[in-house]
Length: 242
Image: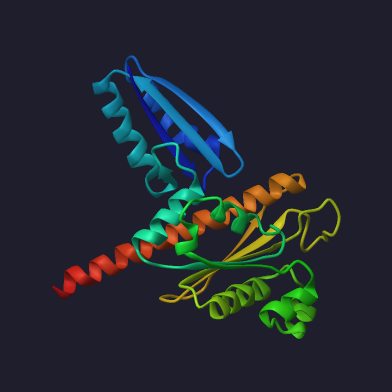
């Protein structure tokens, strides 16, 4: 019997199961299991070699770029490896995640080669003091907003002189929400040297700890996808030029 592992980010367990479950289980002799964690789904497949190869084709075709690892690697280990391989650097500006992104990245051996700085700007004044965020921007749009997330990422990248910078700003709860911005709202921004800013809004209505885990996982996956996309674009340009 052989075993395959697929670690998936960016989509939930129900979506994963719907995408591959019926097709994979239709293969004779295959065993299929799922394990869900905040922001991550692990798929495990057991079977004979020929059946495993057939199942592998189905999984990769259905889930594609959502698969971040086919081993025991964590998402942060994958991100550090990608940044190292492409000789790139990264910084973070965290509000609602309270330094969790920086913590996860710096738990990886070799992170010092790619991680420049982590700014934990929890209070509004800290956002101004540490990253020069205009107080009027916060007053006008609120700390939890697309413009502030954008400014945090832009200024973190500029201050750290890094290739990429992630920012998070959100409402972890259980209080502090409003009809317009309920508890669980989070904005994640990614600034990079070679392209336009990415800012995305998410809604994670859960307890504070799980909220932080989901936000950090989502941010790291956003960075992973961006690194791969930029590398593919660069490779295509080089191919055309040659």
